[in-house]
Length: 264
Ligand SMILES: NC(=O)c1ccc[n+]([C@@H]2O[C@H](COP(=O)([O-])OP(=O)(O)OC[C@H]3O[C@@H](n4cnc5c(N)ncnc54)[C@H](OP(=O)(O)O)[C@@H]3O)[C@@H](O)[C@H]2O)c1
Image 1: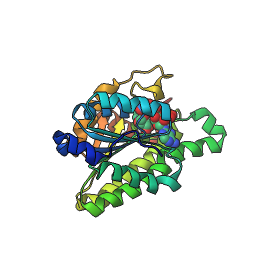
Image 2 (image 1 turned 135 degrees about the vertical axis):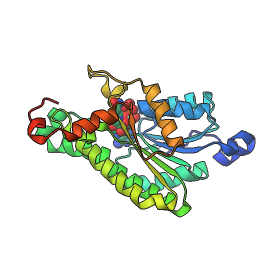
Image 3 (image 1 turned 30 degrees about the vertical axis):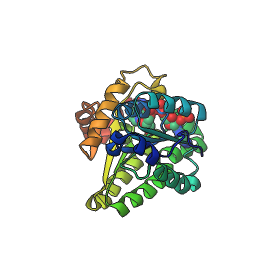
């Protein structure tokens, strides 16, 4: 774990009075295309950011860029988020560096290779571990932290792929279905404690994750703008682009005897 900021958030606040009202945001998987675009908006608002990613070089570049764009504080830690035994130490360090936390944003994930996962259990298990089990560990710590303070927003990137099992993407889809269900239950538990849990369900977005796919993809900056608005409004669920809300309603309701014959 390493921090980039030369001064802790408290010192940054003292140096810049505007930072007193700046949001304190923890970003897990900060080098993700969607996370970086979201952080650019927060940086322009003067937010205080703590960024976690596993690639030190990419993380340093993102952090430097966000400082230039106006973030009032940028702390960083290099971490492989699959290492669940290190989560408590990592998250404690992050919230101490921020001297609190208004928003936790979980953005890391892997698409995996569906064809490979159909043959190799270990590959399927890796996708489910990174996208579901590791987030469960992070979310458990974060939810308990927020409940103790009766405050906080936890925003998580799930996916429309979790809405129904499809042959082209059911390993990734099932990891996101598990995550979506976990988030629904967590929301049901912590909403009465003053804590907001937001499930973000993007359709295909133009990032490194989908670079190999020849399909229509949403612009990452538009997606990020919708995510920031949803967090400000403390929504429960965001489909982005919004057209995916009616699309997925239809997909969920296609009778199984028809659905199983479709090439989706
Ligand atoms: N793009 C889409 O169409 C789409 C649609 C629906 C949902 N989503 C979800 O949105 C989130 C962000 O995706 P994206 O499109 O921004 O993809 P991306 O640019 O490929 O970003 C994924 C990020 O996750 C990080 N990551 C993966 N495993 C990690 C681990 N064990 N520890 C730490 N970091 C790890 C990657 O780090 P490295 O750079 O080091 O590999 C990368 O920064 C993901 O959860 C994804 O499933 C994306």
